[in-house]
Amino acid sequence: MLLKNNMAVYGIVVCISILQTSCAPSVLKDVQTPIEATAVDAQPMTCDDPLSYYSGLAAQTNEKLSTAETTTLPVENATDECLKLNKAIRLSMPGIQQQNDKEALVLLEHLKHTGVLSGSDLQFNNMLLRHVSQRQDLRKMIAAQEKRLVRTETQITVLRNQLKTLQLQLDQLKNIEVEIDKKERSLTSPTSE
Image (cartoon, rainbow, N blue to C red; front, side, top):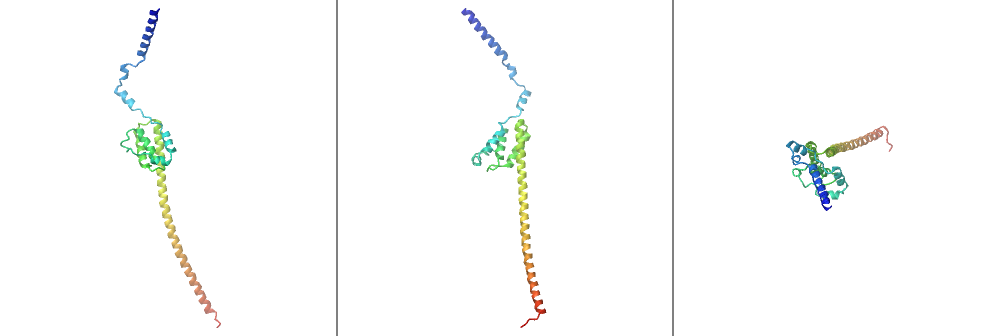
């Protein structure tokens, strides 16, 4: 009976090992052809939810954002596209000292044209690119309107000065008219002495 039990256990072990080897990929399947290797490498990379990263940064106070080292890596050293996207997000955060929309736009434009980001990451990148571009356009419009306001205020000052001058001249003319009127009255009516 002991021999039968050992034989049964041995049989089960053999069956399990056969099943494991038949389910395991063969050695030849693990070797990739150059075409398969480039297909695997060409897949878009997925960043760790850039929207959550953006929301997390936006939730921080300005003091925390300003004191954090957020722009220490130059663009050339940030080889990973996700790092570049995160850096662009940090640079585009409004209200902090490190905000640099121009550099953020350069990074976002670069990422838009690389084609290595996944679909959702690329959508976020393009949304942020539009947002920062619109903000830059608004800043340009504000600057143009401020220049226009300064010109208008200068014109108003000039016109006020001209108005004052004309008012003074008008007052002088009225005084002259009053003097002339007094002289005419004195000539036409004799004075009784």
